[in-house]
Image (cartoon, rainbow, N blue to C red; front, side, top):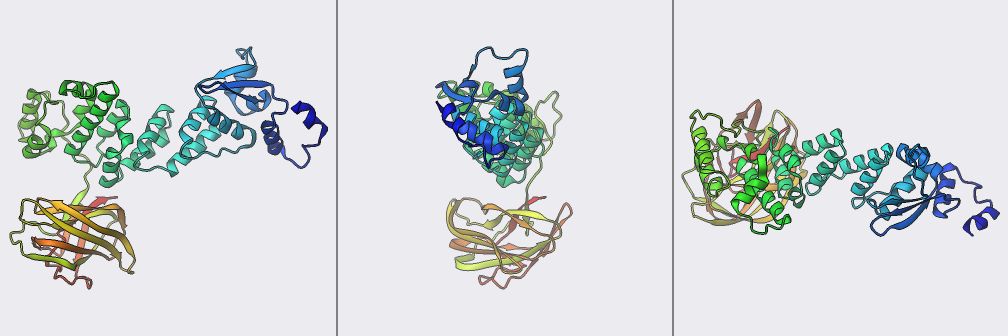
Length: 431
């Protein structure tokens, strides 16, 4: 009926090739092949000639020596919505992908060798890459052998301590396959502390044990799930205190392994130790003082502590260090700004309650701040809480070719200066 109705009119008039293709697909004119797609087996009709002209896989399927004898072809692994996205691209180059359809569209494009659509999906994934989805993108990049996309995923994760930590805390991290997890934790470029890596690995293992219906896995099951990824934790680079307090209290590691690691930490030669002893790329704490503070009398009552700084090479600033109190546990309400030399606020961290128990604590920004070389920046801090320690500082700090110079800030109203006061350090990642 549809063929007869449309054959009476001149629907082709005014349309180019793509327009005619779109009209024929939408109105199902002269369709000569039917697909049953998805788990529901929904019927989708199309044109053999169009499909074969755009895809070598469809050409072989429809016209090759091993072509389908039946004009109804089952495609159970691609749902109707995604199959229609694929058809629209083949017919009139409209993809309409978004964050909810890009992964499955990529699968369909790869299956039918539609390389242009594969490239569009890859570009979309690169542009939308974030801490909460990069692990899923990495999984697909490895599945489809997309070397460039795989490299970009790793570059994104390895960029800074801040980014890597968010990725390892994400839900997507838990769904990584072991080989992809291994490719991350074995890298020298992963800018995370070994105790955090270990905690993340055990979290991953417990999650994947639960997927295998082991809701409360014992340490033997956790170790089995980790496989050889456990050997990528660089225990010998830690202090004995950190190793025994944070990582050796459970029995994921054997007693013999703990002894060997402890011997390696104190510098003894250990035969056949399987754990690496080389340090990874490190984000750096730039400390203005090289000695521990002894006086805890700095007032923190909503006045501004500020200092200016500049550095000779580009860095990413992802947080600052502040002095705390001598009590076993204390709390401060902290507000922070990073201000450029032209008075542009680059970071504005709203008041945040910080509860800690050490002399010096870290405050991390919501996202890193790029610092250009030889430009002045102001670190502006307003703290409210108990008295804190104070430091005595150097005017210049050097670290591996990076030279940080500090200057007095006119914003400072609480007494912090180049020589003394609050703001003992910067948390930096070198580019």
